[in-house]
Image (cartoon, rainbow, N blue to C red; front, side):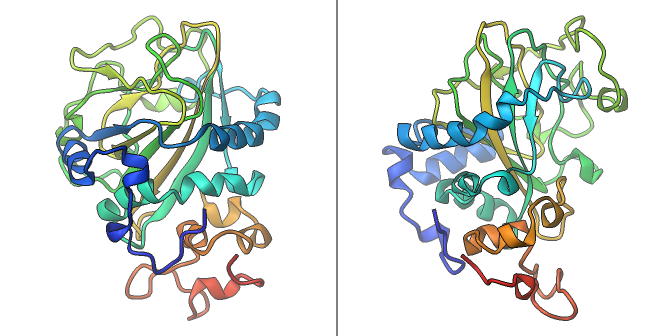
Length: 295
């Protein structure tokens, strides 16, 4: 899906993916509740291509290293270096319409990973995704997270749990919020002994091929997988053009592979500037470093 650099997504026809819902209505829910779910965005054929590209990395069965990643979860990082097909999710017009309106046209890819919750996985600690920026709340978000359901996400298989409206919170935090030890330890049982259910939380259940978009300030967590099958999502995340991404995309994706990606995806990786000239290389636009130009 080649999204040209000059395309104004605020004027794009998003109706094929909104299924009759006005964009303004979806945006209003996103602003008020901190998230919105958009069902049936991907076709069965598109889903099949994503699953096929992920399969070799799922078969490697590399498990999480700590309580935050999950001992019964597979996490796949550096996705654009593994297969360019993932650019189709990262540059999807519906997703970027939200990202660019929230974060500006110079936004960057904050992170992009696949998360496969295996049967027996416990709930993740509560967190919000732009907490790494370490700025006081309440405030506007510095990032936006999206969640593509590659498999159905259900009440039983670990659908992401969210607290609607929590993007407006100040210093409040839910019981079971992440702590520094959660990034360092891999304790058996994870959070199971104190799962921190919040009275206002909901489970973001979605059929395969759906998209959830959430503000970087929304409190959420991966659910527990009490089913007998994995739950698979891909989560591209975006940040302000002046904010440091969680995953260093200019190193995660080789320059040779980046040169073959669509131009808009190159920009999201960091081959672009934040006005007036943040991100230059040797006084020049960073896209000049791509030996083969844009794809």
